Image 1 (cartoon, rainbow, N blue to C red):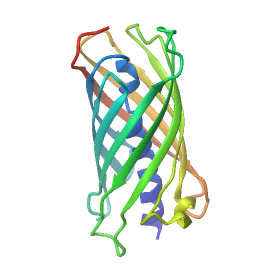
Image 2: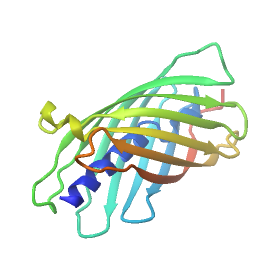
Image 3: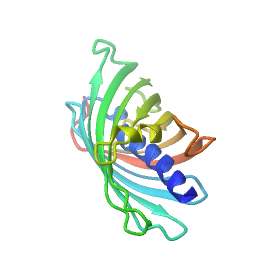
Length: 205
């Protein structure tokens, strides 16, 4: 049961991260984010995200667990909304996304769900070499569209820092702290560190 609890919280973090991993730094440019996440203990993930300049993004994640759990996958589709279009320096974005989590045959009970996420983020110095981003979000879990599973939901806080963001390829690091809505699954929160590369595919605007 402890593995299930840890898994659910980790899924919450990864769903959150794939929703706004590093896309906010692209602005009005199309790009790809390649990244990895770890809690430096048992949970790691590999993530790939494609962001379109109109705000749409698609992402996929592989979760790599220690301790015998087979690798689950997460596929996400979402959209970033520009809430202050006139401000080119500091951006305020809202976002919505929907993630599908695949079956995990290694568990005694197969786990499959969808996870809607709603969040907001603030990106400062977007047109500079070192933009930063702060965000918060809530992710719910619906297994077989059963709303009784809402106590598996998580609330997450996120920070990201980009370096040399005017380049075509540049690194990004981030930190997420997630806590469950219910202490049925875990009484404390979980930190996860992220590192990755943003690759701009369109001409900088």
